Image (tube, rainbow, N blue to C red):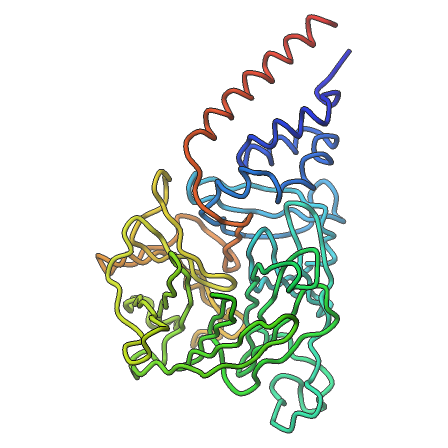
Length: 407
């Protein structure tokens, strides 16, 4: 008697090409045959790359209840107010006691109990062991905080966040097309082209809060300075830094966001003592240095997502559960944050730009969540995806009936 596992792989691929992300994940959970066909293709599925403008919250990652050697990832989808447990082939030993440092394009960067740095894809099960961060050769400055008094043991807590950027494959030197920007405390910025065997230090003097690639250049935000490096093949050339002349913003954590070809800066007070302070948004006009920044009071039907990893603004038109004109934020630099009693605290939630009000996330969590961008975000697709999904659903139903009649 024929079963669902007998569905031809070509037909299954054709169906998955027309489904949204969650539907593909549900299909891959039907059986191991479907999983082996669908999971490896997830990042390249057409609608996968278009229909998820809103990130998920990664709440927890632990040993799988079905296979302790593998990992279960718990995600929360804000648009459906639903938690998902997604089994992954990622070895649990790779992320045991993991500290997640950033996410973008379906990838996560984390350190583990063995003080290893990994780049993992929970949805496909792909994993890369990243090279160790080595002391720059010949540097004469004080790097005790980063490498200890002996100078040969890197302090992994000093790596605050990693920005995962998508670049042209011929520039990245790898089949992933990824460039990693590591931000360190109390100072330092390093870059790694995934596939290379070492990190390249761009700066060891400033403490950077956020970074991104914009117009083919690396922009990194320090306390009151916007630094820039131009990507030239396999090298990086420093350009003149820009100064943000506003002493009121110096103590705030700053995030860089690209929106419609423009650069924006989001500033918030991430201290646990000041949870109600106003979050400020500014446009950065790099072509007019005399009036570099200007305030933004309304972002319309959009929401900004900031925290460890890649910051992004996304349209909420047609989506439920997401508020427009709001800033969604998660704990940043969590490894260094202790309150006056010595306990780690959570500083995550939603800020309404118009009302100037805060509200917590509608979920409980033990460790601070991190935004997980499950795919390359391009633009939100039309409602035709729903029509295609319904068509394929009835096709599968018809196929099932035909199989039952034959047998």
